[in-house]
Length: 91
Image (spheres, rainbow, N blue to C red):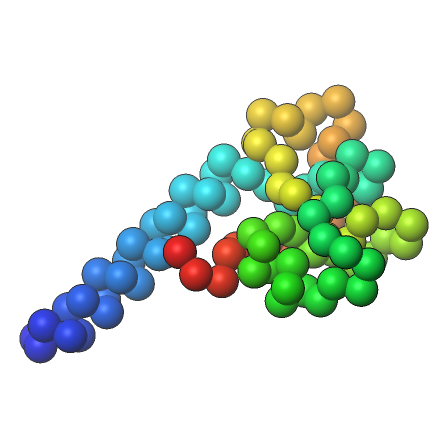
């Protein structure tokens, strides 16, 4: 295999593993009233993703772009709403 191909494969594996590791430590499953704002009004899903935050526009009147929470912090009613897991655009 060419060195470039090998580098691309290694980079892809590292990014995949880092995404999986973050997914185990943080979650976007946050009850709407527990969300901590991560963006400005009108932020797009891609802008929110670039900030490393979660985006869920299914509930009105609460932040749509919000910080993920640690998996340990999903107690006390913080879990239960659907949220899209949004990973940073680059690692």
